Length: 302
Ligand code: HSE
Image (tube, rainbow, N blue to C red; front, side, top):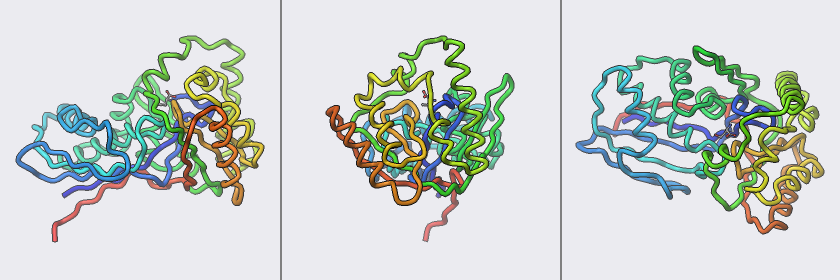
């Protein structure tokens, strides 16, 4: 029996659209056992909307890896413990992609190393910002090139806490991408690229007060604000309550704030209040960064 535990992730971190991300200590766990047919079992907090047939993303991803190496898929009993809320901007699809690749790779006797799995996961997702921290843990910058990806782990154990405020609405990434303009004005490109530089510097040097500027964005957050009523006010209110910085998590609707010790509760309350004033209910979690990324275990029964 194989089990893989994959962390939730937050992508973009403000200006780092499609390239920056981080992993948090909140997990989806996938277990695979030999079986006479393909069978799914669901456990955990978030199990709605998960296809329980060959359209399941974990299974489809496993089949992509097996096809690449000419391995004939064998039926499995797959148990999904879903604790990452889906369609909220916390990388739940990436947990299925990374989990499917790691288990398929193990069942095929490990033809790919983790870097090769990142390339494959990026091909499948189209961008590496969630799958990279899901595979490596920590805070990552991952650059796509013509031939593959260059992943950099910037930090594994930062001293801040991450507050995530999860609005009670679903946003499909495809929709949140489709509303973005295809071209970015030059001054916005300069605004974002300068802040991505600052963001990397802030994480490497652990100079977290820089995050108030380094998490600013002009190329996707405001463009998505119509999907999340109260988002700009909630992000501002996080800073007023003492957060180092705050951003939209992935394509939303979750918001993320980087908090020094002791301010997390005030930050969460402020953000939730700003959303509630716009008739958006939410839940919040205070999380640490996951430092190791997806972990696969081989278990023997008994
Ligand atoms: N970078 C992606 C986006 C993350 O913002 O659309 C969501 O998959």
